[in-house]
Amino acid sequence: MTTIKNSSAAEIELLDKNEDSYDGTNQQSRTESFIGNLKYLIVGVFFGIVFVKAEIVSWFRIQEMFRLDSFHMYGVIGSAVAVGLISLQIIKRFKIKTISGEEVSIPPKHFNKGQIYGGFLFGLGWAITGACPGPLFAQIGSGFLVVIITLLSAIAGTWTYGLLRSRLPH
Image (cartoon, rainbow, N blue to C red; front, side, top):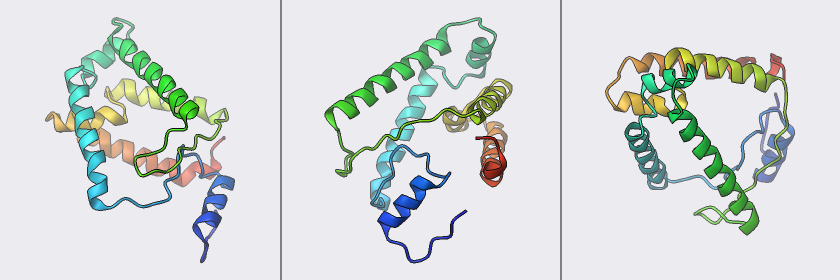
């Protein structure tokens, strides 16, 4: 781990790209104001409502998916992948910028064996709890307060990964 002392934003950005910690798709150079962050809250609430209405947060729908009993979740996930692919191609082709005028940078992705282990653990947790990180908040917002335990477990897992990341296979 590198300690940064009195570095400019460009030096920090260069360090981030060279460090193992750089895996974000877009590093925002300007910080958002409190009011600026409200757009994320609005989009998040809208996203949660869509999740609830589409039954994506339903534990039974997720169990159906893992038992291969229904196409519902595969259709939703496939639609999301298609929208993501098309959106990325449009952003790259037309060099679309963010709302604040910053360029969107999408670094190339590299495969490593840790993604298989992480994907397996993620799927196992998803099958056991019936929730992945996005729907957790929608489930809590829908009144399923027992999901708070799943959320706390996900936070603990993320914290543990951050603690052990340098020792894990990548």
